[in-house]
Length: 340
Ligand SMILES: [Zn+2]
Image 1 (cartoon, rainbow, N blue to C red):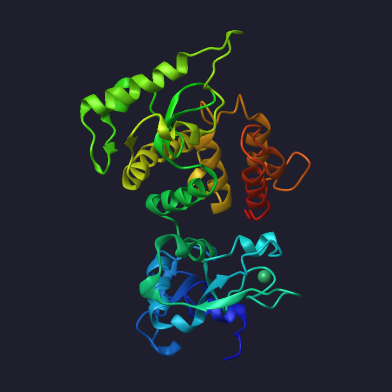
Image 2 (spheres, rainbow, N blue to C red):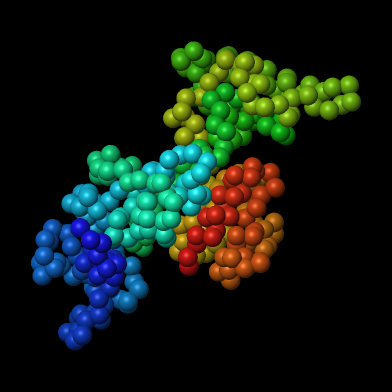
């Protein structure tokens, strides 16, 4: 099937408003078509909205219905996975797209020299995180859980996730996705295991004491000996381990307070474009003390002015000195994709 004109497609899939020529009493000037359950345009329902750009309140339900009924319109973007894949396509790996609403540059294989391909889409196999870009594309608001899923994907990509406790560069006991568990009560409250069985309080205490002991050791010059070891060094120092589901839960607590903090910092956080939300959540997650205007004045100003690419823009102000290059490059790339 030939690709339909994008505007027409959006109208008949309930993604774009239509203007009523002669609104009757009680009718709005603008409405969306509701394609759910209809096979012909004449059978589609209407959803009245306040204005031309008001979001469709049923955007999410319509998208899900559409994905079930028109699986063939969707695909999973796949790359060759080697170093020749351009960065903009690497970002798309594993995500679901609608063939009628291709991202910049077109569907896989359409851009010059692109070796990417489309994997068949099956609704039943779809995960929450695969759908987030599509929801963003049609202007549906993401739930907090979807934001957390998205954030967790980023954290997994950039944080070195450890199942064993280790000392960070400041000598604090850390575990999982960079969670600070230096406090004894916090450490004892972890659902740690030893050889697959729940660790006893004594086993946890022993591990804690061992790490504390290591954190106090200095060389003859008075320098701490174990503050800058690779995390891997600590794997053999204790036998306690944190199961994956606990690691996710620990991160969840962190993410929940991060989102709360950002909503306090930015009044209109919920209206920000998804890439900006993701960048801010990522910074908030791993910067000590969190985001504040005092520490990030340029970033705050750029956000207020909705300046993405200028010299003083968002893309130039998301750099963090203590995270790797790939994480900074990611943030910069995300900033470039922001559309207010
Ligand atoms: Zn490609």
